[in-house]
Image (cartoon, rainbow, N blue to C red; front, side, top):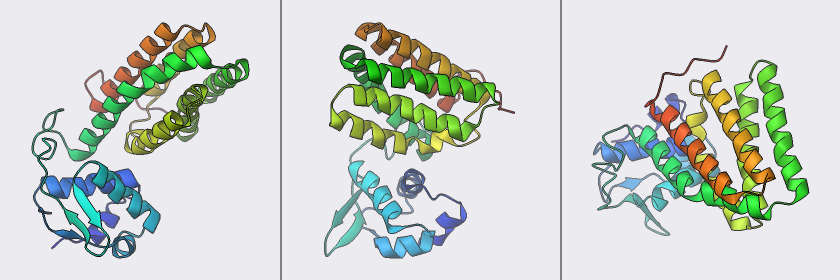
Length: 243
């Protein structure tokens, strides 16, 4: 039997981290194919979160092919042939890190073309808005780096690029991927080194967009995404904590 209240004690309240923990239970065999997962209301009470949070976590698991939800039958773990349950494309790593790498892999697919389209389609007002976000981020760093504020500006930068494409579907898709990125933005990973590297990358992307150079915008975004993944995965130099 799964002690669902134990998840609440781990302070995993965001949809992405809840889904990652359930994914771990499936990977470890604690939840087996055919086993039922408690209803949204029951999970909401056990975890101490809203039903909307539980619903989003279950939706993510369903999209990943790990559970099946049907009216009248409830939510059950499914027999999946996807290799990520027993062995991942990214190796034998913990589910939360694996999920982040998968999200970054998806960002690597969609964000360079978004930057490319932004460089081609952006209006003067939109470019000014993008430049203002970069300036605000630089000011934030000069004031001593508030990681949470920088995260807000970082997300706004990427969503503004998506808005420049004039394609609402791309903006919505990017909004979801950034929600999935929440665990990577915990304070222990929002280091001064990462923030400075991110700002430098944003400046290069901005420059490409201002020059209406789609190839450069795509190239700089690709480099930016790869750099984020390097920091998250710990494959590069150990960052220095802010403060």
